[in-house]
Image (cartoon, rainbow, N blue to C red; front, side, top):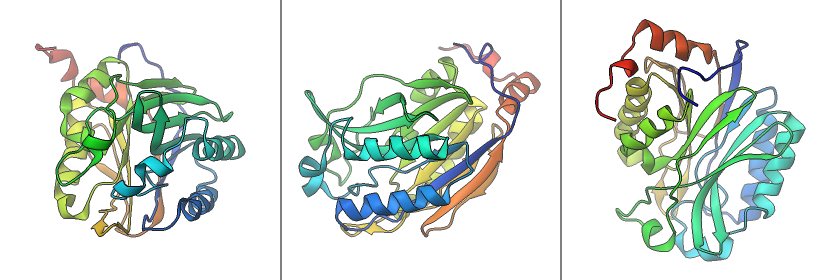
Length: 268
């Protein structure tokens, strides 16, 4: 599906970004917190959670122990909540255990509680991080055509690689969904890169970040929703909250028609 042929419903899309506080709690405590926050997101058409919220990005010592198969407790809980809320839920990412090893995997669940798409993080982080040594990177660029539009999935460090978002654009993405555990120390990079990915692709972008601190690393919060011009429609604080916004995905086609930068591409 190309950007020109994708079709989006005309009715507004209600978003809820769950900026969850992630500390050093047990996974069971995190699951209970996620369930409560998802309840607060009721009424949204699309709910988005951050990266590795059920373990904590920097809890490298727990990666092997807390990893689960894709039909494990975390995905089952979120599938049930999606069906209960009758909403799309981008459940952020979790540590997936597969025959190939461990992956940082984001899952998009539809309104019936069925898995619509799963994306294994391609760009694993190596700077002062054990992610690259502990996990197996994904290989596939993933978009999902849903009842509410076409969404491209990505995770945190992916934001630094614009070629991924061009691939998502070419696959028909009208909105990028980003699960993240971006640190407070590089908050300005977060602000610049999220805006850049939206602007250069004339695409909506919704990025859910963690809040709080895990293993001494403080997350930056500031989850954000951007329109195809890169304008901030909603932005969270540094604390735990459910950020809401309402968008019209039809604006993507209108923006690309008004300002045809995408059609002017030469190098592909």
